[in-house]
Length: 92
Image (cartoon, rainbow, N blue to C red; front, side, top):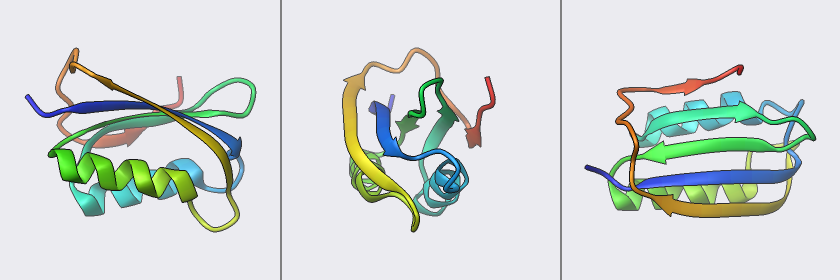
């Protein structure tokens, strides 16, 4: 099973198309997982895929899309609890 990264991103990351941009980038790179807003203005994301692709997504999240201001990215590498077939924006 591929590695999984669990991220919590803080800063100005809501209302700046962070989730949609993350989804688009993840699909282009070829990782699966999900991204969603959290209460309090943070974004949570999970990426699964080949190690170098997951690392590319982590680096992208440290910058985010134009208009975002990323203050911190907390990364936890985990054993996947499930395998995701696609990448999606979650709303809950």
